[in-house]
Image 1: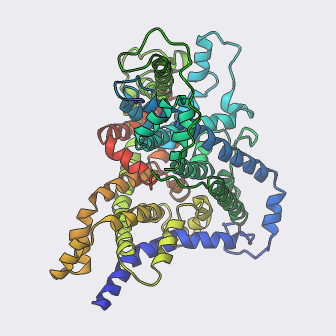
Image 2: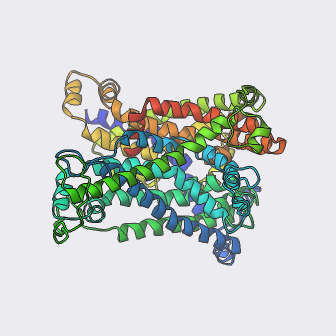
Length: 307
Length: 305
């Protein structure tokens, strides 16, 4: 029996673990090692160079630009996205017309809003980025032609072509595609807060804004915090890479104004053939990600509310 | 429940509003409620328009001529130009991209669910040395930046001869889907009752048989949730194939769309591009609307522990 149990355990774990070890763990471990080499990725010969790559990274202007943009994304994206989502979710759940015997009520048609808001979540970020790339097109895009139509002929920004605006355009796309997910998520959380709490607070004369900050937000804090981590990883990871890679000129341009860390890793490795140095930047990205998670966990620590 | 900090009670001093909001509401409050109601509908409608508009616009543009997309972007199509769709489907190889994507996602989805549930079941139900270690090994993969592993992974795949192959891409998709799948299904298997599995064992079923014939059917709701999550993630995957699958004939949908955007951009074939985009967008949106409840449950399941 015991023997059969272990054979079963090993039998069931060996395939998933092997796959995971070969394609995920092993490359991760290797990347740390390669970050200390001058490997090009093209030839099999390389040698250890100690911390050369790391000191080169600290002198690399483009690395600092990418880092700056990534940090900006990590600070702004969660703030705006979660802020908007909380606002919309609160409006959905508490903004309704009063009915008999109910101090608060959801707005009519809230399920319709939730369905529509969730659309971008199921779409590929590639589709979204391509759609917005055309919307931002300075001569015939949706945005500028709308501006023209309402008589703002003088106001025709270059959007993705303007180094001052391009990164914000990318941000808008990422916000547009993620807000709906959090509206649905927060909305579910808000629906599970007992209505008595709101009734008691409203009876005591609290305004709705007060009830939001004193009741809704504290009781939702755990969900908000995990949303924060999720958004941060998104801002440092695949989604930011994809949006910048697909939408911007260069990609990463104009004039490195939208380049982000994952994109710079990709370009260094596969365009510039400097695989060793690319993994060094990747390790830098790993450190930023861990720092971010640690900060959110630390800042977000609060007494857990049971209800 | 620890929120006892209610603000000091303010007597209802606000000027009474003439129109009350029906019976049962005191005047001052229902005034506030009404203003809030109008305001909240206002902002909710604006965001709904902002979300739906670009999608509708793309559908509209896919039926227009290039000229009218550029000159009158907001006008309705003069007639439905279905030739845009057929051009995108055949000349722009959308049909090939669809076929490749279905092949890759089909294979990796089955593999992910099978391998993920096997690992999760063992980790959730059996005590053995190293159980915790293996569990955290899997979980850890959720927070690491994938791009860091991608550089060496490219060369690992190259050495194994798996680069630019469908089966290679399937294996990589499965491996990178395992962390979340194992995390989600482990907690799911823990919630299932033990008694039924024990009864099956007493009846002489082997561990393997118990798993496939008793536990897997019981875990169906969890498998559906995590299946939807993985399906969308793998269907929309862009970064992995961009690095590992550069063969023009083997491109998946997301790569194909970028390719289409680049080449149609030169040709100025915007209508073809939008037809391709809508083609890729519609099946997912329709599936979402039909299975709305399950999709939302599947995608939010991970965030609501």
